[in-house]
Length: 259
Image 1 (tube, rainbow, N blue to C red):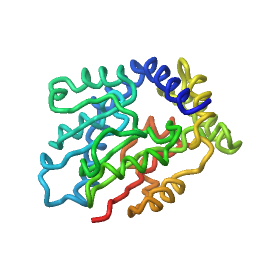
Image 2 (image 1 turned 180 degrees about the vertical axis):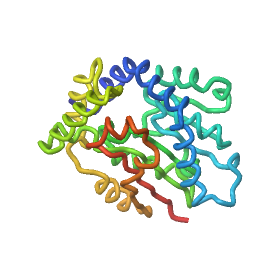
Image 3 (image 1 turned 135 degrees about the vertical axis):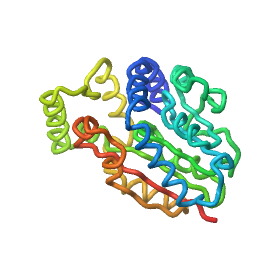
Image 4 (image 1 turned 135 degrees about the horizontal axis):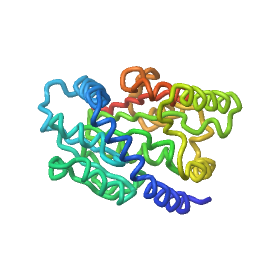
């Protein structure tokens, strides 16, 4: 499967996933998860921009999906731009944003080929996107390019499909499914078309690469200061997510562009 095919298959898959993925985001917006993520993002941004008013900071949310990050960042007062490859996701994000939609600049865009000028944004954020890209190193280069000097990049992701390549990861993944069923919670890894996503995952590079060490290596090669928080999941995940995804803990990659 070449890069163009990956884009096309991703577009078809995520278009079909809009209702289910939006349901996940709507649940986050309606529960304590919303405040957990707000606190997390605000705290990380204020480490760099403690003397800046929120409305003066231009934030780019890449791979916004149904709009969760864009919505909470807008509620925090930031000037928000949100992009996604899937038009149907952006349609859903506008619905989820409600009255806030007019305050968020939504655009259909490839995360690996941003159309924005160099040094356009103070902050770039992304969640659960990098693993799904055919050229993730190209994406990182683009994200750093559009950051202003002294800008901040926050990327939240996990080794989502390592179980396709590692036996130990596969065993742990199966245990997650068993424990989720035993606890009677909604298992977000079970549903329609998950076999399609697994097939796509076999054709993208990061499924078989252990992260976040790869991310750090790539970002440092670009020339940005980089660090990792491997326990961020403890701050932002619900108890259900901790059961669902115990074998694939969320990490945060944090990078700061040179001043």
